Length: 322
Ligand code: NAP
Ligand code: 8YV
Image (cartoon, rainbow, N blue to C red; front, side, top):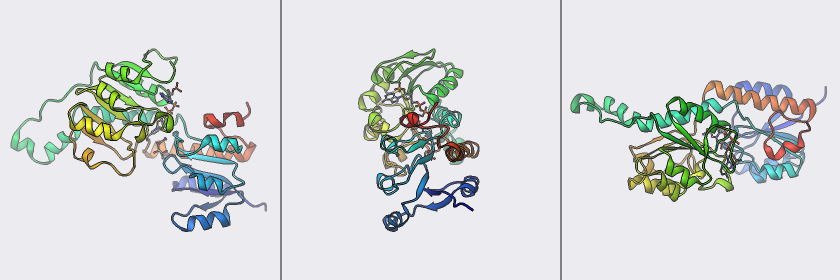
């Protein structure tokens, strides 16, 4: 019997993924803490595959300790925690999980928008606390109908958000580095997009190029009635500027699924009534995480079959013929 190829698992996987991975690979888990370096020195050579996710990625010192690495399969579409250019330069294929999570993440974005506009969390608290009986009707909120929705990042998920926002009667405008083949108005400057928008959905990739793309100027352009929804990466928004604008009433509200230093969230945000906070759960349903896990395993199966993957990240596409 030939030996199974060795795979390094970073973080947790579902039982369904574990069964599939273990049927094809000899799986070793990356330890956390001080024993990690010794483990990599002893066991790094011979590992050909890595499984990870969008939060943990592959730390540079781990990638450097794996001289025989050929493929990284990440459970998530965003891969800013993996140096894909460095991997590609070594001929290592990086695969991610695009498309299978578009609907879930777009639903999360709309959920946050509705919850902020209609003040879902304070309204829920009004009932539970007895304020309804004691004080009477909950104050009127703002409608989401007929608004202008700005989409920062008109990619797979951005387009899915746009379709949902249109169902609420929204006019759609967007910004990306270049115009897309979509029936919506392109705005070349994020500040101008924010100025024209009632709600700004942030759904660009993370990384150096988009760090603080939503800065104080964009936030101020959105204005005291405006709502910011961030389901992209925490660092895309200047969190200190966001907190300052919310505290001063220069921004109307925010729905945030991602934060600059997850899982730490500024105390100021936790105390605000006009924000809704979720713990990076954009894709976190049983159904979508199952689909993502299946795609991770399908990518690795394809790698074993012919040395390619189904869904390479753009930096590695040239490594996949055809
Ligand atoms: P995608 O299809 O690649 O779309 C990204 C969009 O952003 C494209 O329209 C791209 O257009 C634009 N963009 C890229 N760099 C930009 C820049 N520097 N300035 C302005 N626009 C830029 O990606 P996707 O599948 O929609 O996913 C987007 C991101 O959502 C992921 O990378 C991930 O970080 C995040 N996400 C979060 C969750 C969650 O749980 N909260 C779940 C899934 C994904 P151009 O190339 O023309 O600029
Ligand atoms: C996941 C994500 O939370 O796909 C992404 O980019 O941020 C989320 O779907 C993450 O990848 C962990 O699995």
